[in-house]
Image: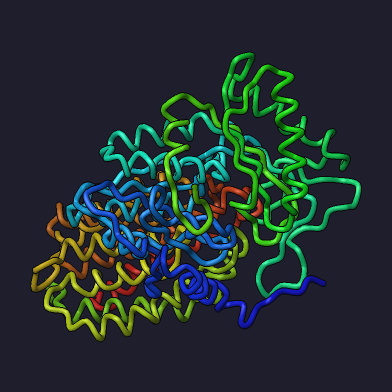
Length: 330
Length: 212
């Protein structure tokens, strides 16, 4: 039996958005219907960077609205894409005449609704471009909709947000975002599934001696279960396939994100990062930047994801650029 | 019978379509349970309920306007996949009838062809993939033939409605390759695709309004 702080489950997203906007008045403004979040102080003369997706992954995406990152975020219902009308309204609201970059996690509904929004915007003379984030190595198969988008979205949004702030045009931003996405891979491991708002049972049950290996961020099962064990045994199983997929070797530089899936403590996440860094160091891979914390969640799932991103000087400089959002500030 | 569908006819068409979907909502949801996630009928019915009010409130001044309203309502209703595709489909009818007093058979044939292209492009769906395209494509071909052969509006719509129905029924024997139905494979065989059935209901409603 799982207990939650919920009124009517159908109101969870709207109520959370209202609370979020009230908690961050210096950073964001909420438009309630259609629902989207914009910066409190709109930017001018730059390409607008907009992202969105189903709710249940907080702080993604609304937590990344602010200077140096997103101009707007469009939240859908829990685990459901926002509508094309929502995306169009948010994009219109932040377009300064230089076009809108849509950062989209690769899920059928999100891709469809963002593509439709792009066509609706084109009819109104607003230019837009799409960067698809598809970093989940566990869904790297030849058929089907391709790799899912997960925590690399944070890196793509940060890097593109910084480049937009510096005046990059839409074509440059699209190319940059695609390059970062192409150089990103993620693997996620769950220790326990999350529960939908208002539901007392998690979306799947895991025996105490197993982990869900290669899990997604929508409460679905993974293709594999593996033995549970200490961090030093689980983390290398995540690092090695990622390093192989990205062709990392001696002298490679990466940005590493260790992300909590909703119910895993920072204490554990920093321990995971320590293990990941050690394994990478043994392989001669240099972790030049890192982000450790809870950024892309699957409701209250216990577990973590590890994202590695190939880092070059341009990506690092943009990563280091100032950012001021509710969930990420430096 | 009239050779054109004016604004009032189009509004009747939209309402007749909404009635038909509401009547069949349980059946559509049941079909979706076999091939998808079981919310198609209730989602369609909910979007159409909203559309009824929106169309009534809109005060249409052109034959395409009710479809424009229908399209916007569907595109703003839910962030799934079939709803938005229907939204873009209705939008093509809105575009075809923008600024026009009435739809001719030729305009309906053009809107159907463009709607087919739009849905196929956005949904990456081809004929035989067990989707709404399997009802749209035969309707489009029937309408093109009707225009070519100089058929009346009512004859053309009758032919399109019959072709869409046959196309929708035929999805019973198809394996899904797009959308959620692609995840369940053979389990969906024997029952038609709910999206294709809804398209058949759409042309059935047009036929009814045209008195064919």
